Length: 195
Image (cartoon, rainbow, N blue to C red; front, side, top):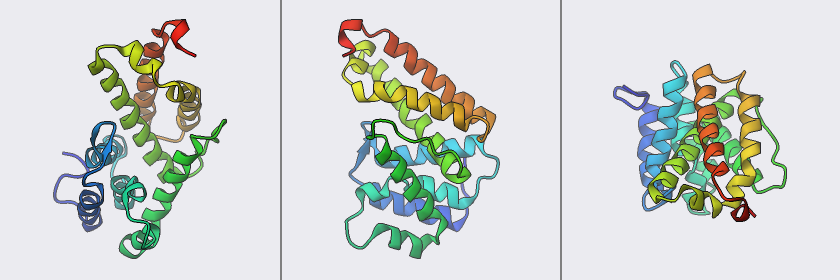
């Protein structure tokens, strides 16, 4: 059983339905975007005992701003359909994603619902990258072609250390293992290929 197993709160049913609609035709990590959203929500449920339904709904919908049409404003639509908490969490996750393009992204670990959703998102996304690297048959080559990801690893490690005391221990440990496996994989890249 997962947080998405029936019976489930109406807000989660609605979020799952809306995620299906908005994610249709989009991919994340070479998979349907809905699969990513579902895995993030399930990861929260794997580590948080009885997570708030708003948090699970936000996890299901966290990438919707990337897929929704520009008009009407997606955050107004989400607020009308879900109340203030779901779009607040989603907006914070979107802001965090944008800061990853900055030279020194800030660490934001003071908002627990956002922290839980962000940690689950990192576990899923980074774990997917590891699976794709292994499936490629050329792990060093896979990561050699991703200098932006390699540059972000210290940030993700700093995030894991800062978030560790605030998120459930199992969630922090899972992110730690994922990051360790990534660091080990990147260490296999020949030095000449790292620049």
